[in-house]
Length: 94
Image (cartoon, rainbow, N blue to C red):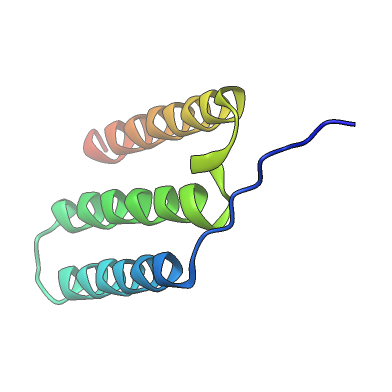
């Protein structure tokens, strides 16, 4: 029988991540109040990527998982970035 190490994140860490997610949500809402054109979409996407990373790392326990899962998640984010870049180029050249 194998003994596996499990990591349980503390309530304090969850609280800190909650405060960070709420702060980033406030940034996203604040950006919509200003007329920055396409820059506001870029800022919103960047903040959403940070929020998704925090959720993946802490609430889905990717931070404490094996390397292969971290690589899969990084490849998925890279693919998402490529899709965003293609979308922005389409939006830019219309």
